[in-house]
Image (cartoon, rainbow, N blue to C red; front, side, top):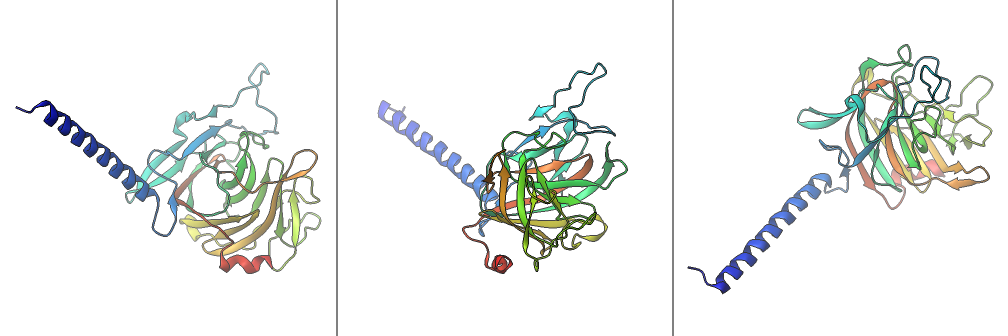
Length: 304
């Protein structure tokens, strides 16, 4: 029979073993999300690093105004972290997680964490399902970066103030401003009805709120994978500069990310990352991010 001292000693040993097991499990989880080369995995089976926002199931004829019911009363958006009709689910492909977005409602998933200087990579492809008001339009989505403030500040009342890396059939890598953002892009100047087209040989010109150009610019080239295969996109961000990269090809060079506060421009160089839902079925996988302390050497010449 154990005496008092032996019982106390055994309890301490059991406690230390339990702590050791918890530490090991925690370390294993961290190791799974962090690779040896500095990349951090952002997608798991339970979307633990993401939140969500859903606005409305917009209809044909939407004009930017808050939707109303049959009595003309404004309808409230669905809001934060309400996964209506399982809009966002994680499925398995080859034993790896894939984020499925049905697109039924306008909205997004967005990271819980804010990021400043980084490289973001993910793979994306479209499904076949479309919803109003895009049933007769191209499948559309996007990655929104430097996202700040509340969701719903855009035309579709679905997203935060941010910069958009467009993901759209035939238009991977285009730029849109979201909310009151603006940015400078190396691009040919627009003329009449012709949109500006990005090209690294051109000077930087401004796009977005309170600039002489609309908040849209076409990417330099079509570089996405044919036949709706998985396309890898990379976003490089460093101190207000950014690059849109499709399957390893730079399709847009941007700098001086900012937003207009009603009186002056303010820097827009950090924030959360949003993945859009925009009335079309879309899949995201291999989502990972890597902090950086300088613009990578292979991209420095784009800014000289």
